[in-house]
Amino acid sequence: MDRLDNTIRPYAWGSPTAIPHLTGVEPTGEPQAEMWMGAHPGAPSRTARGSLVEVIDANPEAELGKAAVAKFGPRLPFLLKILAAGAPLSLQVHPDLAQAKEGYADEERRGVPVDAPHRNYKDANHKPELICALTEFDGLCGFRDPVQAADLLAGLGVDSLKPYVDLLHARPEDAALREVLTAILSAAPEEMAHTVAEASAACTRLGGAYTPYADIARHYPGDPGVIAAMLLNHVRLQPGEALFLGAGIPHAYLNGLGVEIMANSDNVLRCGLTPKHVDVPELLRVVRFEAGDPGVLRPEASADGEEVYETPIDEFRLSRYVFAEGTTAHDLTLDTPQILLCTAGSVRAGEHELGPGRSVFVPAGEKAAVSGAGTVFRATVIV
Image (cartoon, rainbow, N blue to C red; front, side, top):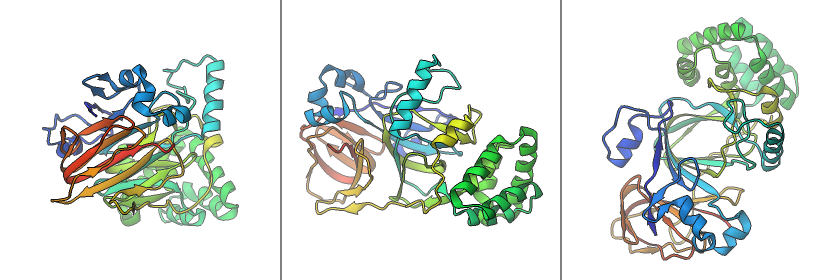
């Protein structure tokens, strides 16, 4: 069992206080957006045996187990994070596996450098993800019913939004959403900036259901993503609740602290709320224009106290244990690789004492006894 030393990513949208408060470390004043736990080459966790990439590369079957290597290859197929949003993240979607393979092969064939700002596909993998709230957590997830979106836009009283309102009322669901999102992202920048300014002022004046969009607009003045965001469901998660984001589902995290897990990929197509490249044609190829409930997940408890967040993919499986004072030691041994993360209280995992924000990597088949009083998230795979 390896104690992990993890990198914190200082993205501009990160909260300067949430991760320091969780871990009991003095804030630096700089944003601390994500703590990465895993073997992603961009910021692998470090252990006493070397980086987790080096540890796994030295003997994949010993670290990951034969079944996981046979199914996913000689790499850890998930990345676990603590995410602290102090400002809205970009509005984005992720491709499915076939789209990722096709897009990656196309950009490789055309010789687009991997680090080019207009590159869409960094790898050939999909990127399903799950976010579980540690605090109250706000986000946008999936399309609203078009009529509801039309009512929200109409309520602003902005004349230049009327064509979008009419489209949302007049066409079938998928066509309506596609046409309106296309129109928003393809509008002349000067005209859209004026529309966003008027809509932002109205959101601030009206408050209530418009408050999240007023906040978004303060961070991204003039960005067409402010209007696009109003097409999506606003979700407020309570601690312990989660969202699963599958391929093609537009989403954005707005504010809060959570545990995030995803397939080990960096493929993101942006819709707005960003100064980065927005490839409208490729985005429209990937987005699923389906309205629906965002589907808040609550963990399902098993007899041994494990609370599982059920998802339809195998690259990761996230669960939670809440150990009360006086609970006897739990054997969490599995024949698959695990990362155990403490988010509250104090627990002992093997020989390692873990407080909030501390984690360990447990190789497949390695004894994993956990005791103490606290909350522990377990990340592993399904084989």
